Image (cartoon, rainbow, N blue to C red):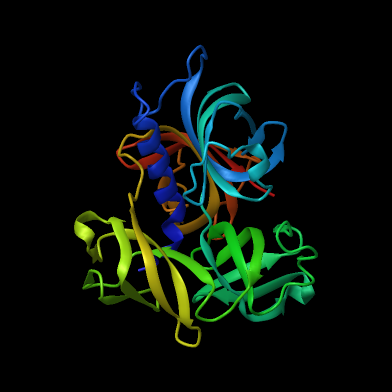
Length: 335
């Protein structure tokens, strides 16, 4: 099961749940912003600009929004903590080409050491792995954040760099990075790492037990925080986020100090939604997957006209989720 690449769906569900807890609102749990007209909407995509923030070509005022970054919900978080290239989920009320956000969520896809770094595409791209996840960075399409490691860039990245990555998974489960930040130099047994996914079939594990997830062995320490896992036991029907220390990098093994269960999937009738991602599982225009969400674009307007969809194409889709399917009004090619 390609569990890791379902990250965006889990993030969207978290956004819906968070807004639902704010009070009010029909339309998939969206909570209108007081005094603002327009349509409630969930949008997920890369940050492409600031002023407020721009996501999928829409400017969102985030002055009054709650901001969550890697599970940190501190009141001090603001626009200055966000970066170009981060894949975020925005819950907002939109009118025309602008909106007012009530929530902005960013959660990196993986944190861990670079391994097996090699050049691709004549030196214009590089590939490597992090905790068994294959990653591709592109000199033109990946933003490098050197805020905690001055000089970190496409040219200087190296094996054993401890990195945080955001981006989109393709149909082959390769993480195409849109944002990468160096957070330190990896030290085995000391550096903290993070991975997401669904445990392998047959998993039923609690404190002191072990399980595997996409080839990574996870040892749940006796003192691990399992308060965010139903019943305190991890099972194969869950989507989880694991934090801990990498104790073996040849056969990746994590000593987990915290495991959080995340709700997976959009509401069956989530309403107005906008997604950016890589097309996968393409059958035809009426049946493909984007960021883990099934899409029907058989009646959509395509931009540019004549756009031919295929696996691996990066697009933005707008529409309404009904019965678990995103019924697209518009599909736009993303450069």
